[in-house]
Length: 471
Image 1 (cartoon, rainbow, N blue to C red):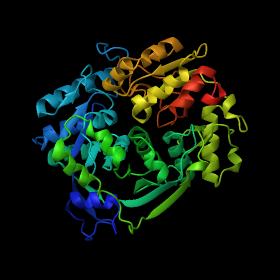
Image 2 (tube, rainbow, N blue to C red):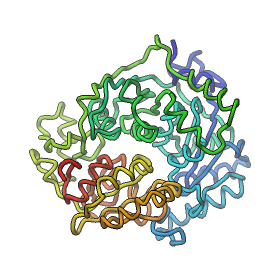
Image 3 (tube, rainbow, N blue to C red):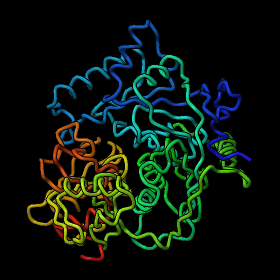
Image 4 (cartoon, rainbow, N blue to C red):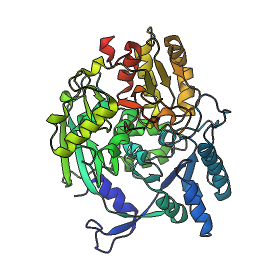
């Protein structure tokens, strides 16, 4: 009677909390299989490790990359921001000192940490994975228990390869039927967040299940799990199946022959028991999900693409009404405005949510034979060096160039977090394939509408929020 998350947790628990089962406030000590690092949130952890005279317990289970501060125009471009430049220097120095593999800017394996983990074959079903980044939930798509941690926890994992954590609750999100044509995993997760809110999954691990989820590709499942944290959950996962195994089989470092068959047989057993009890269950009829676009300043504030800016007075509760009013004031939108009437000046395609090769293919499919609207900047940034190489091999770069898009040569977080040279100007309005639309997320005073890659590409052509069908 155990969920998949419970099984993985139990297999990695070294010591249970004082209450015996850890589920009512006790803290378990959990073993960590893989520790991922990037440059933005790690300097202090290494300083504290050094000050305490400790070494890294398992550098062979630790992997770092440069992604947040990286310039995306060229690998030899100097990082303009002094703080970003310092963070990048420190990750190199710290990894060299403690013997941690690092994918530096310009390396063939460099990219956004949540993108390169699966690409490099580091992520496998049944693992526990942590990183100093909340969107580590992405890696749960492989049937792993993956979550973000803070700086103090980074030091603890570096020193011990373990993490003290309270046991998490379980939420099942079952998506019945099939998603309609043109509806993506991005639309599905925005639908979920609109239903349960940004705190709906707080303290839970979300397990995505059902026919619609099984039909998703691995890259789409990563998008789904990536935004689990935007619903407040600590992690999100999908039980491994043949889609998972097909993806993993070609990855570097995977076993071959009989060893592969043994691993695959074990991975196929990693699923929730039929009689497992979830603390919360949500059921979504896939046929009701439509392409969505955010209108406000958190991911729960979205509507169907053909919808209108909502009236704050219609929101439930005084707190939600006040939040909606603040959001509309910041976004400079008027209630009742059709979302498809909203003009934008920038479109960004990329990030750990939608910066993979499938996303770029989808954008290229919309752009082929079309041109980006006049005075609109379409920025496309691959999630990794490998994604960039694949895009070149498939000729996607030529499609982007002919359409007038700005396709960058270096993988990284880019405009998602505005910690580098890619950021919006104050007052600029963008449709973005990223995961967050908070105030100032893509630049001070900038306004962000979250959408799928297809909607982003169509918007770039139309100059206003649009779907491919509108073209």
